[in-house]
Amino acid sequence: MTRAQLTEHIFSKGSYLCVGLDTDPQRMPADLPRDANGVLAFNKAVIDATLDHCVAYKINTAFYEALGYRGWEVMEQTVAHIPDTHFRIADAKRGDIGNTSSQYARAFLQTLPFDAVTIAPYMGEDSVRPFLQFEGKWGIVLGLTSNPGAADFELQSLDSEGNPMLYEEVIRTVAGWGTTENLMFVVGATQTTQFDTIRRIIPEHFLLVPGVGAQGGSLKEISQKALTPEGGLLVNVSRDVIYASSGNNFADAAGLRAQAYHTEMSGLLLPRLRDIGRAPI
Image (cartoon, rainbow, N blue to C red):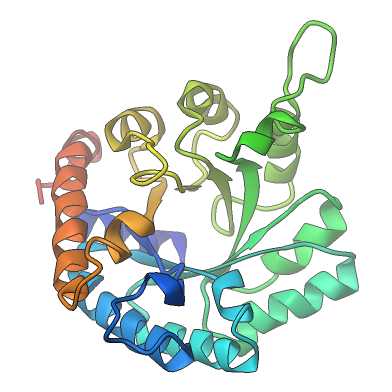
């Protein structure tokens, strides 16, 4: 999916919601089998219920790899169930020496029909570039994460004056390896104090923002700081949507929760629509 297609989908729908399919068999309704078959049934029901309210889905591969070979099959079947009108993200956090990254990139962006894959940039340019070689596909590089461990490295200063922080240098450097057409950055929703700095460094790149909902990030605050005239933002919500109910009405509940995010996002998008001279949604 190209940047123009993604932007059009965001503005035509009035949503920049990404639903995270981090499906844990132990959290599924009791009537579903707690195995790969149950995960697939759960995922399909959630996708069908939320499709009208989101523009993207993010599949965290760890939840599928933990189920062995059958889990990988379920991941393939899940992404195949998502229509190509929606942006499909493999949250795999890959990154290795160049020839290995090339194989990871082929796996997710060629063999599987994902539009994007998340990347850990610690090993440098040759570990990232292979993910940026596929037309209409994206690399999503970890910029500033929302976990407590971000303080260990990402938020450490590079000089005695306290500036810049390591994450700033990572984002600034990595931005030069790709373009706004094939490169996004992950920025955690709990890092709101850093969004102004990030937007100064990369004013036009798309950001994938996890951490809204169960992790406590503020959708309104993030949107005010990070939305651009072209959208430029995908907000991922996982547990707050897919586990909106633990009962057999889980799909309906997920749909209603996604609808609530959709409604809020439509209102937050209105100023951006005016910026580009587009009629309200």
